[in-house]
Amino acid sequence: MTVLTKPAQRLKRRRRVRAKVRGSAERPRISVFRSNRGIFAQLIDDDAGRTVASVNWTESDLRGLGRMEQASRAGALLAERARAAGVESAVFDRGGYKYHGRVKALADGAREGGLTF
Image 1 (cartoon, one colour):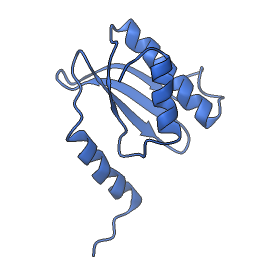
Image 2 (cartoon, helix red, strand yellow):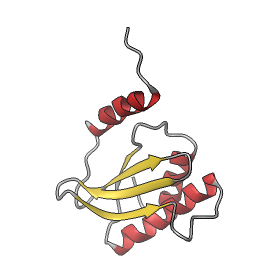
Image 3 (cartoon, rainbow, N blue to C red):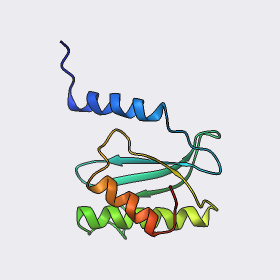
Image 4 (cartoon, one colour):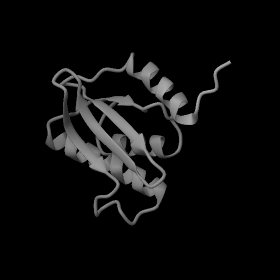
């Protein structure tokens, strides 16, 4: 029996999700990374291999907020930047994390900001 570490388990889940989720120019992929200190999100066009918009917890708007508030505000900020780039719809890539807590808060913030997925 193999014992996988937590990062290895997350990587396995992440690869399973990425096999099914693909972003395009019309519907880019929202990629989420959650660390102990903050949350990062990117809108990625997989066809062109480029990032359309991104948000980082170290930005001045998000720096002093609590974890959940930071995640929902990051989602709203990402949606605002996506609209500026001409993106209305996206696909959500949870990155191997449970759709729960801060990951869910980011998705809800993006939906409230006007993105559909």
